[in-house]
Length: 204
Image: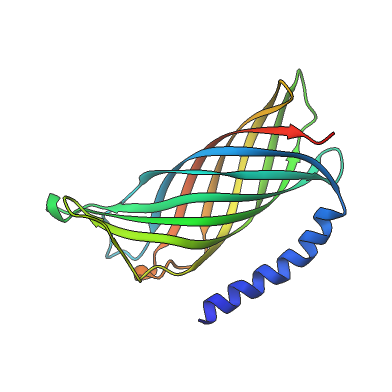
C-alpha cells in the first residue's frame, strides 16, 4: 500500500508543475507510435535463467514547444513487458507477461533540421499502471497472477530521427526504459529496449 501511495504522490507532485509548463507552451504536434519491445527483468542472482522476450507497444504522443530546440513530450502507451524463464526441463519453461498503461513524460532536444532530417535526444520518467499480467508454462494455458504490483515507474532515455513526409513527420527512435520499482516477484525490475516508428502531424 505504501508503494502505491508513494507513487501517486510522485505523480501528483511531478504532474502539477509539468502540466503547468506544458499548457503554457505551444502545442507543436501530435502523433501515433508503434514499437517493438525487447523486454527482460533484472533480479536476484538465484534466478540466473531469465531471458529476454519480444513484445510490442502502441500509443499516442504530443510535443509542446518551449523554444526552437527544446520541447516537452508526454506520451500515453499500451506497453507489453515481461521475461522468459528457462530451465533444464523444457516442460517447466515459463513466460511472464505484463501489460501496462504507461505515461512517459519526456524532455526532447531536437537538433536544427538539415535537408528535412532532424535528430533528437530525449529522457524523463515514466509511470505505469498494470492492467493485466499472467504466467504461462509451456504447453499449459496462462493464468492470472497476484504477485505483480499495480504500479511501476522508472526512467526512459533514447535518441531518434525524424523526416518530413507529407503533412507531417515520420520518426524512428530507440529507447531504453530502466525500472526503478520492484514488480514484486522476487525483487525483479523491468528492463526494456524499444524500437519505435511513428508519424506526427503539425499543429497549424
